[in-house]
Image (cartoon, rainbow, N blue to C red; front, side, top):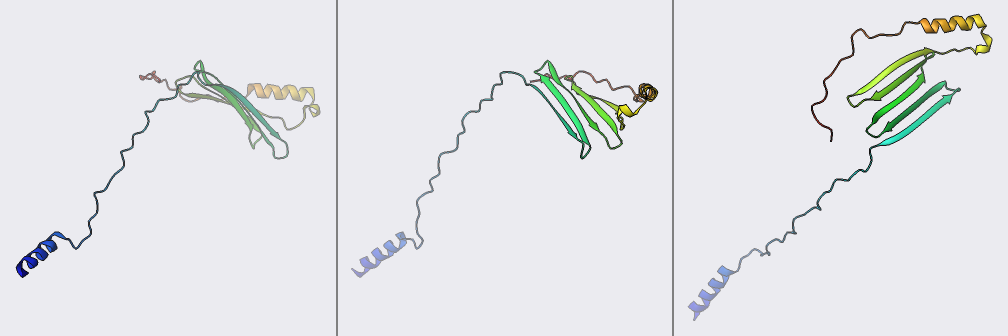
Length: 152
């Protein structure tokens, strides 16, 4: 009887582990995102804006005008500002679908009111402004081939 008791205690000791047992881990279902649908745009971009700043206290004079008419006219605009040397820089820019094009012009601004100038001085000043040499680039503008890809 002692042998049976000893054998049952030994068998019971072999079945019981000194370490705790835990259930198998349970993981949530994998994430499934909703199918993505790209937004549909009804019309091409069309806008028109302008602004002007004239601050005589700080001497800040500038303006800008820009518009776009869908895919027909990509972007066209103009901005101007008075530089510290008294000249007015006017930049006319556009995007014809092949790149950005800008034409820069400079004009001399009068610091004196025209009422203080005589008719002869005004005529001489107008002649000087008309006969000033315009900047011409040393090299012709580069000509690039049309893009081989098609827009979206």
